[in-house]
Image (cartoon, rainbow, N blue to C red; front, side, top):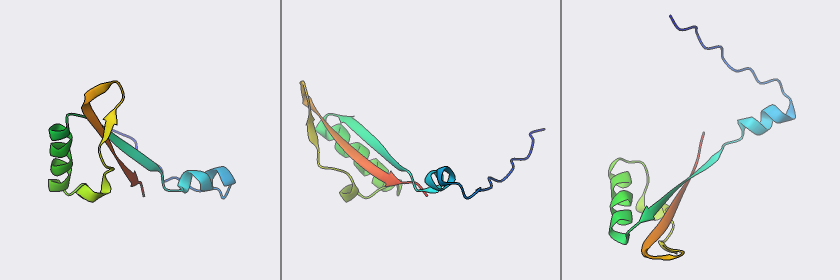
Length: 76
């Protein structure tokens, strides 16, 4: 049987305060323009993100057939 997880107690130390700050994470999508657009629509339909929250498509260096977009979210 798994052991119960102990709640994390903040000690008031500066390094603990730094860890309690919200973390920013990024999702990067590479692919053809139609494929990237489809992923953005699927995330929208799953209520994960709005299409306007993604960056504009940028060309992928050394690959003219692909674009990349990014989405940034703050973790709570």
